[in-house]
Picture 1 (spheres, one colour):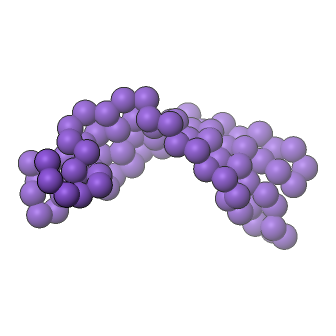
Picture 2: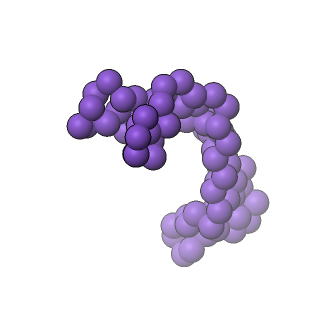
Length: 78
């Protein structure tokens, strides 16, 4: 899978933060290069501060569009 996050936005409120981004992901089966899918998703990630690091506590992914076959993502039959 090859991903391209774009347009990241971060809002910090004390020990909580929210990251939003648009992510394009290209999925290609290694066993069958003709089976592929291209997706554009909106990501919303809630984070909480843990000492000096930020930890993901919730992630929501909404698909905007896709082309190709879902088998490239989930496996199984075409």
